[in-house]
Image 1 (cartoon, rainbow, N blue to C red):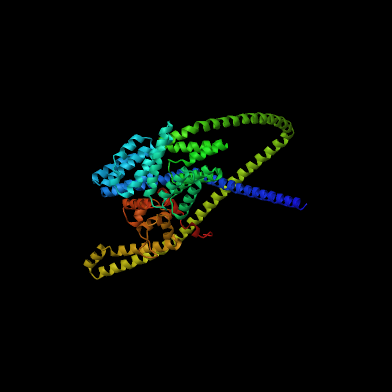
Image 2 (image 1 turned 90 degrees about the vertical axis):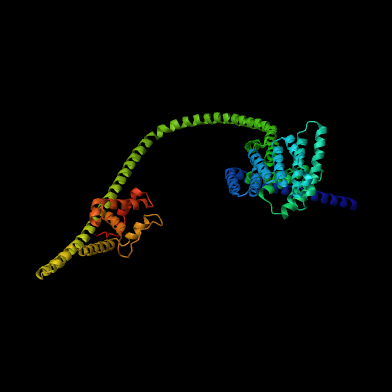
Length: 566
């Protein structure tokens, strides 16, 4: 009995452990699904913002082209072209190839050996990307790598490793593939030997080696270490994420692989590169999972970018899977159309039944609808009449306000005019008496001099304008500020003295009073008509609003300052 009890307890423990493991596994899967869905949302948003990232890329290219054009010597031009080449290499191979040729030309003009070798390596690298392996290898064979600086060895070995890796991938015969695989491994080891442990180049190549030798778990450790310790660019992060996806692929962890492919795709698109693998690989994975529509979309984007980049190898790779996805996508569209056709038929039948019901309801509702329509017409007419009445009231109020304003201005200026006339009569009488005294005293010469002098007239004009300024600014105390508010910043017209106006301000003060004729303004200010016209044109050109509307805006200045009971 005891033995039986122990067996039962042991069985229960095993079942509980299995159940706990199952629950933990379900939670982990749920969390992975949530993270993938979240990353897919970010990817779709990134795709929606592709034009923005492309524009940022074009701005960066324009900035680098300007740096190249502003370089003062060939050495500066060589380095400037190097930066421009780094941006163009994954963006447009035609432009990158042109830059390589120009860079080589400048390097030969300088005559420095390592510069020439560097430029030729760049050319070989671009040729390799376009599938011209023979030409690329011929260039590399012509370069004596041993005589070059050590920092160029890494680039040299990297190009050869890339070429032989591509040749192995596209080899038809198994013997050729094995030979190229062997060369790829050799040059990859050379790249690793040239790099310092802990650098990005070392880590990516080491992870690639570990993946190819069946040690993906170690490759993951290498990549996670470099991604956690180094400050990487967005494009660097894309390469690291893709390398991690290859490791998870070998481990059979499809969720982690998809996560890394999405991250790599996001970083590729944000970097505005056009030659990439991640989005295409993600599309293939989605196609295999049955998400044909998203796979079709991603492959279309990949094909578009590869075509714009002139990356023929990427186009060929996409063409291997695109027809299958496209055919299935079209089949799904046709299936959807079939469903839609049946839906339309069912909806049409329901619509006919609904129309039949409506027809019978319409008979009962016709009288009510007619009455409602009449009421609506009456309400519409009433609203229109109310609108017209409001408009008429507003026009009447505006007319009354203008009349009141004119009456107020006339009263004010008539009073000023009468006072001024009395003052001028007294001044004329005084002037007459002073001339009479000169005649009585026989001072004919002094009399002649007095009559010829314009001092009196000038003083009276000054007094007249001062009186006009005081009267006008009393009526419109904020005129100067309001007028300058109608001009562009920095174009303000300011009087020399507070409480006075200058010529430009007097012209527009008269316009504010309703005197718009240049002839009358010229007579008032004792200027020529041409001068008045030039002043008006000059200030209209300074208007912050429509220049043709400036004088109308001036005539509205200070309206709220006129008393309502004026």
